[in-house]
Image 1 (cartoon, rainbow, N blue to C red):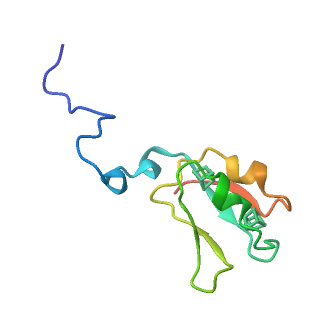
Image 2 (tube, rainbow, N blue to C red; image 1 turned 60 degrees about the vertical axis):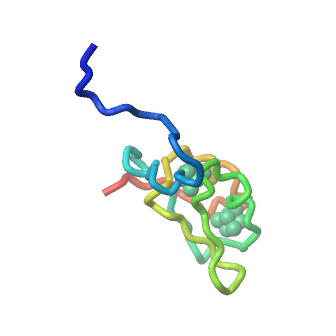
Length: 89
Ligand code: SF4
Ligand code: SF4
């Protein structure tokens, strides 16, 4: 066993989830077409990472690429197909 490897997947203190940037290892990121979006916020409810934010206007949604893991759940659940998955740069 290589004891020089860093430990992974361990939560060693409460309230530390923001330190684990799940978007770091994603190959795709969700993109919202604001023209198609009807502001229903279904994507916000379904995102397992909680990384789709509602803007200060209470309507517009934005994906935080630091935490989007590219799972496509939001794209599958969007009723008007306003979300597409794009390769991460
Ligand atoms: S589910 Fe689709 S239409 Fe609804 S807020 Fe999200 S992107 Fe917009
Ligand atoms: S692709 Fe997955 S992690 Fe990224 S915003 Fe959509 S539901 Fe959230």
